[in-house]
Length: 334
Image (cartoon, rainbow, N blue to C red; front, side, top):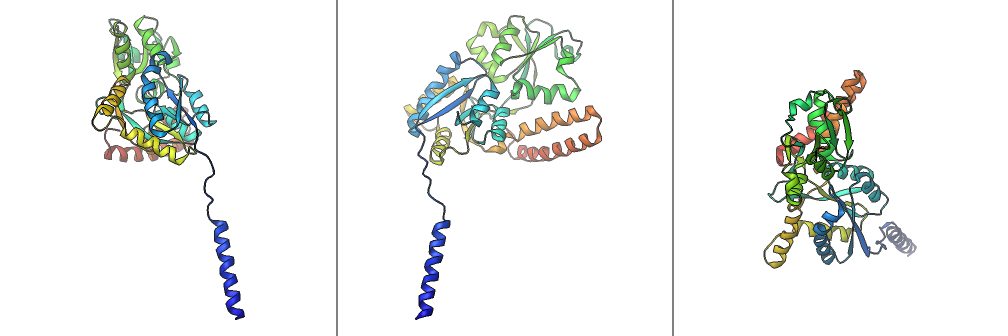
């Protein structure tokens, strides 16, 4: 009898212990509003009307008010997500990686363009008829003024450095007469008006420029294009309410798909943004950006002639290059 009583008490104590150790249900209420940041290479006046219909559809589907936050400053948007002022956003590749590394964020999906491609290209542009060629630019005789992108821009800064200047040992500050950092839109206008001689941009930015400023765009031509770059992605804070995060994921993956008036309307919204829709993606989608960063770091290490720095940079590059190459073999469009 005593043994049975002691055994029952032991079982009861174990049960209470398990209850105490079990995870407590979340008591955090779903947000009443989320802020969606848009990393726009253009100005808010032109981009706002293009994005608002998508944001309205998003709010209707997830049941939460969606407030837009536009900016052309990459760093400020990353910091806004880092300090929880923004919960979700549309980021180009390099800022998306920075958000993952510094702002406790994760990739929910990736963008595809109107033609179904998941990539775009960095370009160098000059004024049509100027006679400026890529060979003349790479002569680095400090003859030309150069417009580069935001330091955090994938196509405006990282790609031309990784694929064009750094492999040739070129430092823009020493190559050009003057270097100015600005948005893609500002650089395009500067080239068209003859204020700058050469500038970076990207294939999507040129498409918008041709659509919104056809006369200006007719004055611009491309003299260099990069290899394919990962298109923009949708990024969310990891601590966003899981139910809301999943609703957001499903919203993007199904937006503009199917048949009927609603799907047709959504495809029209995407067309105005020069997009074809969204596809699944995770943080590994940004591996090509990691590879570009590693390539630039390796080139910089080689310029120091320091064996230790070179060995370390080479090992880092080899590691990410192997991962990125394996991914490209499986998904050649990324």
